[in-house]
Image 1 (cartoon, rainbow, N blue to C red):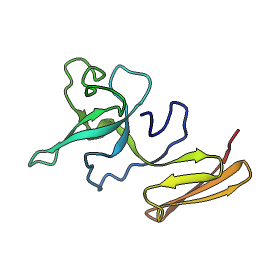
Image 2: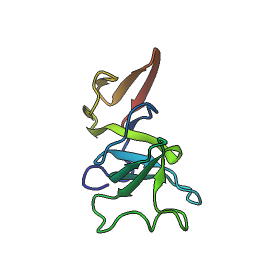
Image 3: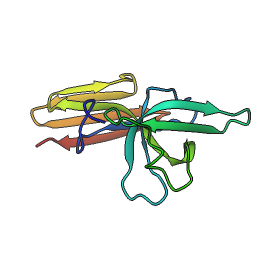
Image 4: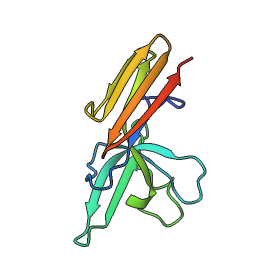
Length: 131
């Protein structure tokens, strides 16, 4: 996903099942037969009348879509393969970018980042040591 972010960068993810997915969003998804999750942008979104969602993805620096990365015979990513949506990532130890600041609260002190995620009456707190 360079130049948006690089391999090894820390991503903050959400995975609200009731939110619709839009073209342009960055997803983390796992394809059958691959050990490593893929982090790429949605370029096409289809939803049939029964509510089934199908997505086509592409890396920002790739010349073509991801169909060659999907499982054999697979043309689309389905909702159940999605691990989450990239909502924020650190630019450097003391600056964080988020797309939903009401859900993610960040406190940066020296080289430690404290992240608090509020979702549906659940609070998740994580402290990260950035080296």
